[in-house]
Amino acid sequence: MEEKGLQAVIFDLDGTLLDSMHVWEQVDQRFLRENRILPPAGISDRLKTMGIREAAAFFISEFALDMTPEQVIARIENLAAEEYRLRIPLKPGVLEVLDGLDARHIPYCIATATYDSLVEAALERLGIRHRFRFVLTCSQVGSTKAKPDIYLECARRLGHASREILVAEDALHAIETANSAGFFTFGVYEPTAAADWQRIREISGGWGMELTELLQYFI
Image (cartoon, rainbow, N blue to C red):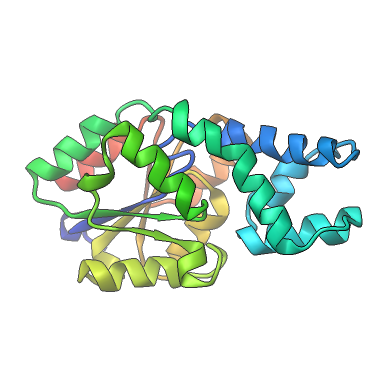
């Protein structure tokens, strides 16, 4: 695909725009500990590819919790809420990237697996919610990023073919999915996914240690 054909951007949220991945590791462990379960090694790695309901079902079946999926979902959302409402910052370079895209008249949106309420709380606090054409979550689409549905729906709403859209992601599985659907992928370095960084660089259309490096594709 010709890079000059790129006409829009789909941003992931956690680990791409927000410096929030460490929060989810803490939340997973807090949830298990308050249920008198010692968090197994690597539990967050097992959960990171799951959607909200899939993760809730996993917790219940794996740890024999006497809870409904709705109770698990509500509790985890509550544990993370304060961080999103009050503390989680943008990753370096986000405002520069949005300004650069605006100057080039490039539309952009967010595709995320995070809880709708947390997304809105963080973006409103940080003062950037209005800058995105729209925000689409996996729960709204009804599938995780293991399937391309969320990216394809974003493309439909943006009014561009997948080959004309750059997808910025920090997670290997999400990059693999976007690749399979014909998007141009840009891998963003995230310390909590350092073990996947070599593979991300191998399969992404482009990559950068900083988000600002994606602007080179919109000269």
